[in-house]
Image (cartoon, rainbow, N blue to C red):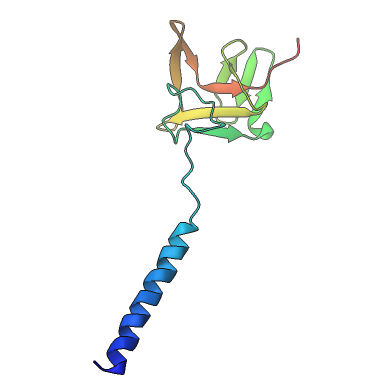
Length: 114
């Protein structure tokens, strides 16, 4: 066989080896239900929850006023496990779920001092 043929074959193997090595270096996909994930499954379907900046939440006399106008009455919030504000949305609206038979918003806040 000709040298050109073997050069092409060797080139193909070289490219395949580089691609295989590069694929081994890819970062693993983020698993929202893996270690460190604490959103309850009834609030978050892997894409619905996100952290909020402090500027998106105002503390009012009756509750938490969110930047979109939603008011979460004190006592309806859920505990944030990382000390930051979070919300879960579905179709652009604050998601809710049932906790102990009561419908509660999927809004998470750090603990408040009394």
